[in-house]
Image (cartoon, one colour):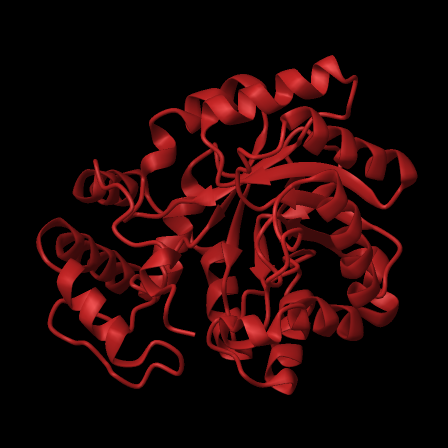
Length: 333
């Protein structure tokens, strides 16, 4: 297992993280086995959020953090935990956002669910334009000084927004953020436009989520085959995937499968290996729901794509921007 510095932070993390979104996992025991398989496989980075829970259902908010706290036990000091704040967790006027009030309240709730005294990397889940950056990053810096979080990061920010955050942190004499977390895959290369040049200059880490494009690159789908046995998405996923699996997106899937056949690997492994082949990417987040998926994704870390294979994947996917994101399935809960 390869371990690298987490962006500008000194802490070492595996190049793959286990994400606990658990979109297709309704069962606590199966979730526990997935976490243990990741840890036993050498992953030391677990990506969570206060809103994550079984089946991506708002009724199960916090269940992912609770499960992680239960499973870790005596292994807590061997694991780097990220969690997030910003997304709505209830109907109240202060039940979402990046206000000092919400951040300070939610970090305590996350710590209790995780059964720990600190969160290693605490991330703002989305941009919040209703709250000044001074308020947001002063609150996060206070938590860092209190020892309740170790490092700070942001999710779903554009490069200019990350730069603005760093400038505010500098003015506040606050610890600067060490990582960004954004979607990146063969079907969404948006980060290459501005974020990649930015992180090459600043050395900030990049956590790539949705490397399988919400499952489209999982290997279960082809332009000709739309299985309908998905635990969570059902016929709606089939319909959306059928719509996008035409033209260039279909060409990408065909090429990934060709490369997978050459290597004796799976489509999911090749898709994730391509993400990790980019030097700007620090960590790829595996959204595995089951032990079997964890084991398959771990295999991506063993794959070394040739220069020719990388070039062919680059060529077929060049220019693709956000073919799919999680919002496509926002109502499927």
